[in-house]
Length: 155
Image (cartoon, rainbow, N blue to C red; front, side, top):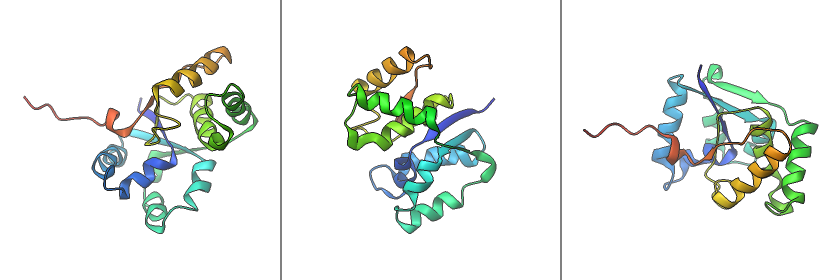
């Protein structure tokens, strides 16, 4: 069974960011080869509307059979609100919390993000997962693309 990775919006933008481009393209190559499934939400689609044209076009050209769209629902919003209420992050990071909650509730294997301030941060991850477990959800694996690309064996 293929692994399901939830990509937040930063991953799509990483394709055109000099610092993140090479690693992000390696991740998308795995997607294009059918090795993984990219899970994204209707929030991601909404955020992409404000992204540069080239980012939107890149997203539109991804192979549809490698994509899985999930809808933000009341359960996701309730869990995201718990993250805010328990001060894992501030209210201005609510959309980031929705991504975390969407990935949690949809039981993805890994949430992938380039957002080191609010998402890929060991202290925030502990906070999100503490709430997840107390809310009877599984812990969520959260990683940057750099941590999940496959490096070739140098031997």
